[in-house]
Image (tube, rainbow, N blue to C red; front, side, top):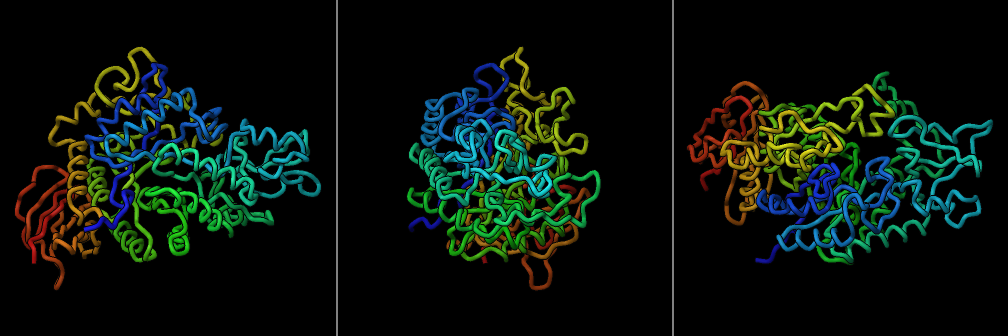
Length: 539
């Protein structure tokens, strides 16, 4: 039978933060040869695609999200030849490689911006967003930077302000200018021609801004001590008319290459999020679904969110799920070690493409960062209220040795290593039959071997308080799995509602890795913090 699903629908994406994955050069910062040296591990783990956070030349004001050249590799990470070698070896292992594409802004050291700010008459002046001061002086409007302070910076030489949604060193491109769009499409083609399999598109919902530059309304729910950016609603700075036409043009570029994809970073309410699939599927292949990252870890809320998301998807929309990334606290820190296992089972049994964050498979947690070691510009600009992203970006823990095997002994890593790395590391867990790494690998293996769990149908099932349950089914084979997840630290009993699903079958995987093969009857006891996958008897 012909395959009806693309690799990105069936596959598991694994995010690598290159600075923190593996240091081959001995400078305390991870690099591309380091990633290459760990491809065998990723193949062993069973992931299908590797997503690299930015590797481009950059002044590193925002650690690679301030790009000065879209078509090269920062020497810190290696060379284009290193990239080509990594791409070839990834493909040789049957995996895909996804790059971060950052279309909203460049570095202020990018040649485009240098030319743009050189004169009001510059041919590239309109490549960025320049505005006169408001009458009487001052910024053109009340727009705020996501990283604290105003989003407008005055250029004294030309007397105008330029807009930056993030740092002042990250000026926003003007995507309403067709020349900008053509130049950025050429960037996509540069990497597509090299053979990359897709892109994660950074802050894609920010790319279009209000053409009238109106003030954002005040946020009635804002309270002092919160992220200062939230003092105003982003009514006119994101999710604007015209954004879907811009994305449709990007999609046209990708569609000229077979089996390529793009996933968009979008933090929006669900009813707005799903519009980014585009009319008839002309948008991003998947808008990132961050519900499991941002919501309270509560069975009722999570269960309802899954149900609502499934019902809200357009017929051509493929679901996706994320537990963590480089911008949010790690799942183990949010829900605890025991529930991190339950979360892994949830992520890898839901319908749709799962994206994993490096280190979550071994239960890495946020690492406290001493003030003198803080790197993140967000924390430096808005200190003291817990917005810094360094804790979730610390080096991968490979073994119990010096620097957790991330960097050579004697070299100071760019961020601190977790104190528990002698226990929480790949080498220690790889041979431990009960470790979270073993659980994750077995979940991945089961998902990849069973169409019911990768591309099969999803159906929610009534469950007791604190418990989530759902069916995954493959109509072609008649295979059905019942997934039961206890999100509480107390035992529960799962039982069928009248007319509902009856467990009848056997446990194929448990989060404690100690109930495999056990028959599952009509009622299924659940221990505290336990998840089960039950292969149901065929009807």
